[in-house]
Image 1: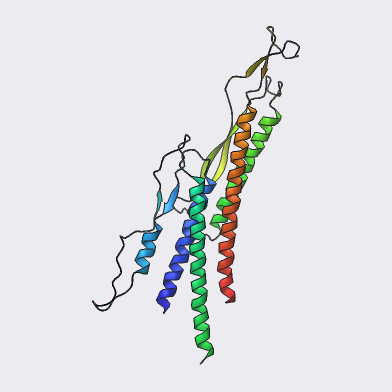
Image 2: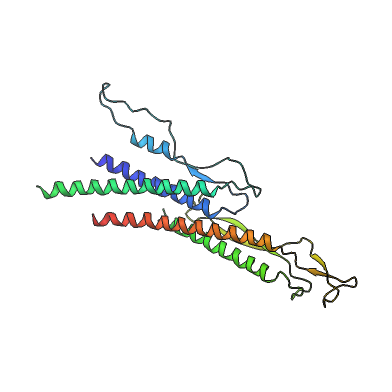
Length: 122
Length: 137
């Protein structure tokens, strides 16, 4: 049971970090020589979400390549000022990230509600 | 980890873009100023943006700040206007090297960048409020 909470906590943490990175990209949209950054996020979550198996007959989840969730610069084409931030991309990513965060929060609320229900019925 | 990092970053961008707007406004206001305190016509100015790493030292995350306001050293516009008090002996007046069209474009860019940072700020706020709502399940 607490495992899923750990996963959710990790999800919230990662989305927060990514949100900050994307905010930094938007803030520096006009800074010369700035490179857009992103967090290798799906891989981190993939590692977290892998199901534990205790028997070979259990359903196997594919194991994604390991990622540290580190912040890396993107090597896309540069603007004339050696900056490669694309505003629409960043806003799209940020919206996606915020929705994921909200999903995590909703799940966590549900989880807490379940605990509360369990406590009430004893 | 600093919970309010995203707010600080957005705020730094808002401040920087606002300062850029001030400089653009100054350029447009002085598009025809032929006299300045330093002598000679007004010179167009521009801001220099530099990344401003957050104090937490977290890799890759940076706000932005205006580190310098530089003068545009391109030549002045020479306009033939013999009646002008600042005309030279051939009747030409040196007008500031301000192109109003260029300033308009810069102004739109500053305004869009400002709006984007406001959106980012609001999104940070929404995320933060959602976290706080966890307390009243």
